[in-house]
Image: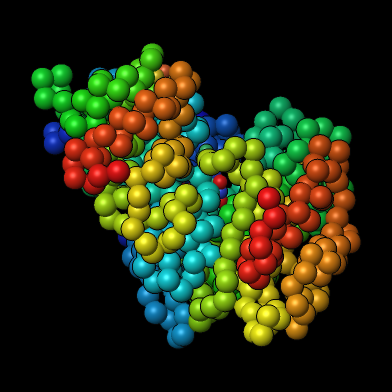
Amino acid sequence: MKPFTYHRASTLTDRPAGATIIAGGTNLLDLMKHEVMTPKALVDITALDLNRIEAHGDGLRIGALVRNSDLAADPVIRRDYPLLSRALLAGASGQLRNMATTGGNLMQRTRCPYFYDTRMPCNKREPGSGCAAIGGVNRNHAILGASPACIATYPGDMAVALRALDAEVEIESPAPRQVPLSEFYRLPADTPDVETVMRPGEIITAVLLPAPAGGQQRYRKVRDRASYAFALVSVAAIIGMENNRIAHAALAFGGVAAKPWRDPGAEALLIGQEPSDTLFGRAADLILQSAGGYGGNDFKIPLLRRTLIATLRDATGMEATA
Amino acid sequence: MQISLSVNGTSHELTLDPRTTLLDALRQHLGLTGTKKGCDHGQCGACTVLLDGRRVSACLTLACMVQDQPVTTIEGLGTPEALSPLQQQFLDHDGFQCGYCTPGQICSATAMLKEIAAGWPSHASADLTGPIALTHAEIAERMSGNLCRCAAYANIVDAIRQAAGAQGDAA
Ligand SMILES: Cc1cc2nc3c(=O)[nH]c(=O)nc-3n(C[C@H](O)[C@H](O)[C@H](O)COP(=O)(O)OP(=O)(O)OC[C@H]3O[C@@H](n4cnc5c(N)ncnc54)[C@H](O)[C@@H]3O)c2cc1C
Ligand code: SF4
Ligand code: FES
Ligand code: FES
C-alpha cells in the first residue's frame, strides 16, 4: 500500500481538497493493497451523522453510512422494500455487510481481473493503455452496453434492486442535488475511467426510496457458488398482478453491464398480458436484442434469458419449473 | 500516528503508520496472534473479530478508524480454563482439522448467533419477517464468509447448532 495521510471528518465539509473518501473500506482498502487505487489522502467519513433510515415523503431516506447488514435487517425495509433486503442479503458475507455502507456499495469498482492486475493494460485504470479483457479471460464481463474500450461490469447487487425500485441518489456537491439511479452510472463509451456522474469533491449523503411499490418482489442471483460470490447474472423483479394479468412490471439486471440494466420496452411488453413462457421469452428477446458476448461470457446470454423466465414464473405465480 | 485501541477490555496506546490494518495491529503490535491472516483481502474470514460486538474482517479495517470501538478477539472470548460455549462445542464436535480458520469461525459464529437472536434474516430464510429456524442451510449461509481449507464444515455447523441449543436458541 502507498502511504497516505488520514483525516477523520467531523462535518460534511471537513474534507481536505483531493482526499479520497473511505467509509467501510471493504473495496477501497482492497484496491489500495493491490495499488490499483493510490490516494495520497484519505478522509474517513464514518463519524458523520449519515447513518439513519428515516421517512421522506411517502418513501424513505437511507443515510449513506447505513451499513448493508442494518439496512437489510431494518423492519420497514423488510416489510415494504423486500427486494432491497433480498439483494443485500445475496451480497458478500455477514462480516462484509456489517462494514459495507450504502454509499460505498454504490461506488464499488468492477471485479474485472485485469483492472486489479497493475501489470496488465486496462483503460479503466490507465486510460489509453488498452483492454486486456477483450480477447482475454472475460467470463464475468458485460454482454450489454459495452464498448471497444471496456467490457467491465458493475458488480454490485444493491444497486440492481435500487434501479428496479426507482431510487435516487442524494449528493452534496456542495449544494445538494438528486440523481435518479437510472442516470447515476455511465456506460464506458471511450471513457471507462468515468463510472458515475459523481464529480471530484462530491459526497453521497443518502439514497432516496419512493413510496413502496408493493407487488411480488424477487431478487434472483446466479453465481459460481451458492453464497459469497458476485453475480454472473442477477434479476430484480417487481410484478403486480390484476385479474391474472400483469399490471405492473419493473425489471433490472445485474452482472451484465457497467450499470444495473433496465429495458422499459420489455416491461411495456409484459403489461396487460397473461403470464406465459412465450411472453417471457419475447421479453427476454427484446432485452437481449443488442447483447453480445466476448467469448468467455457468451454463456450469459442464454443464462440471462433463463434467469428472467424463472424469475417471472415465480413472481407471477406460475408453477415453477424444475 | 498515535492510536489508542481497546482490545479485550484493555486500552493500548500505539504509534502506527496509518496504513496499519486492525489485523496487523493485533498480530504484530499487540502480539495477539489468535486472529489469523489468510487472504488479507476480505475473502476468507480468518481475520474475523468483533467490533462493538459485530463481526468484521480485520484485514479490511484500518486500525486508526476504530479507535472508539471496543475490539474482541478469540483471546477475549474464553481461555483454556474457561472456554466459551462455542469454543467448547468446536472441541466436542471436532469443528476443525488444522485449526487455522477456527478463531475466525468462532468469532464469526459468536456474532452470528446474536444476529439470529435479533431476528436478522439471511439469504436462506424463506420469510424475511418470520422466525428463523437454526437449520443447516441457515447456518451454512450465515457462515459463508468463513472458508475452511480443511473442509470441516459439517462439524462446524454441528458445533454451532449445539452451542445455540445450549444457549436456549434450540434448533
Ligand atoms: C470478498 C468480497 C465479496 C463481495 N461480494 C459482493 C457481492 O456479492 N455483492 C455486492 O454487491 N458486493 C460485494 N462485495 C463488495 C462490497 O459490497 C463493497 O466492497 C462494499 O459495499 C463497499 O462499501 P464500503 O463502505 O466498504 O466502501 P469503501 O471501500 O469505503 O469505498 C468504496 C468506494 O466508494 C467511495 N465512497 C464511499 N462512501 C462514499 C460516499 N458517501 N460518497 C462518495 N463516495 C463514497 C470511496 O471513495 C471508494 O472509492 C464484496 C466484497 C468483497 C471484499
Ligand atoms: S474490461 Fe474494462 S476494466 Fe477490464 S481490462 Fe478492459 S478496460 Fe480494464
Ligand atoms: S484475512 Fe481477512 S478475510 Fe482473509
Ligand atoms: S480447520 Fe483447517 S482451515 Fe479450517
